[in-house]
Length: 140
View (cartoon, rainbow, N blue to C red):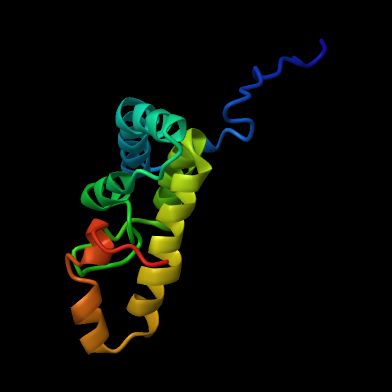
């Protein structure tokens, strides 16, 4: 009798079946980011593009949601895994690469170096529930 040669159906949205490897917390983060991006981000990005402007309030909103600096432990930041950060970034990128880039620059090039290499005084000044974390101060 020949062995069965049935194959699992190909899932184009998850070709490596990575979704099965996520923790429950990572799935929750992804679901929350997806809902925000579909319900609130997408309509505003479309409007901003039509008006040829950058909607600054979106970055503030990302800060309020904990998207900015989300891998930083303490200082009012979420302390999520890098996988969870990647899931958030993927959902934002799916809607608009410009806002994903702004989110990543604020998180990785502004906040993370302060957290990793800054003095205690700098961390205390710029990180705890900071304008950088809540999106009120965006670095260029």
